View 1: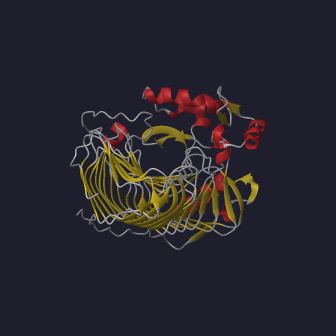
View 2 (view 1 turned 90 degrees about the vertical axis):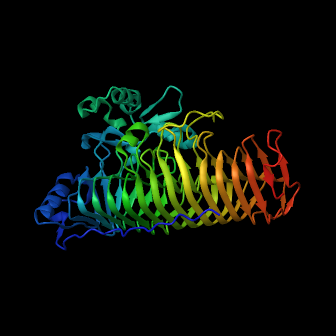
View 3 (view 1 turned 180 degrees about the horizontal axis):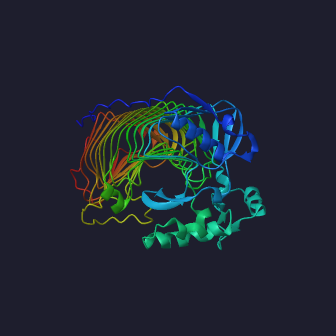
Length: 519
């Protein structure tokens, strides 16, 4: 029997911030939604820092501003009724060397940011709006005809295939130009100025920070990702609302990249891409940095729309480990629990515990492990194992209930590196299709009930050393188990509940006669 990963989560330490208060209106801020308040925010924060730290208070009002840079020992507190509306003008956001999708990159300054800070917080019941509609491209297939036509009437530019709308011509032309600059190793911000409208910032970015607290506000409508913390530690995120339009390009909710000691709890996500996502750099650059995302607890969170509820990858080249995910709901999410990588990434993902997850109306797989991410063709042939080979192993998932998904569980390992040492216990999933497993090894399924509308309940391709104990279905099914692939072996069923399955087992011609037992 596979053991549940055993590890203790270290305490996540909160920031300590002095009690002095500095109200932005005392420094010239005007909450009329028209006056630019960038300088007023900067004056209030500078005065607070000069006094040794404290709370910078944003009262009720609409506060138009450019980027806000925080300082150590400062809490930015937005009161109920405060709407911080970030400027839609790209010129208000200086270009800086930052990170994007696992690589060093030139980007626009994030609206909310802090670099190498200690003891920093953003709290309150206000709203921070990134004005992302002024930045983001929109894909045609995500729009109704009426909404697409409204975009066209608003101005902007459309690519030659009429498939993507851009806010302006510079943003549309920026994709190829920026890629060429990055490929040449050129990271001087001045070279990127003609394409600045393409360089969408994340809404919030903390880099190299310690003792971070985000508690209470709504963060919405980000130009790029919503919340991005990189190489930071002792992070507490609680009772926040993270919102992006469902169609928002790269509209992630929360991305923890190469962070340590984090607690995310009692928060709600409704976004355009992955909701709660763990990352650690991409390909050679991520492996060279070598900083895993680790010791992360996620509990009592709700995800509505998003490409994935809880996600690891695909940029995970520095590794991901020691995570405890519990008591979450995913409702209308494209995928519930999502683990993704591909050849070239490298990195090790291990020591993950997940329990007490409830899902409803999942558009894809309730649980997905896909090591062929973004590959149009799943090459069945092996390639040599190297530092570029991603490894996923040592995970336990239990007490999961999903009322509706396209696929119950999909496991897609690599022929040269199967997904290994996964255990599932007490899982109930209603889905269009059952469990589809390829290139996986050393699996344990206990007390699983899967109700597919069509196809086999269980499907194994080139999988080995699989134990299924007290697993079954209810009602009719076309087939209980289908096994294929010459590498499949050691698949053992015991105490199975076949329901009204028309047949118990079907083997493909390439399967060894003794590969499956117990049916």
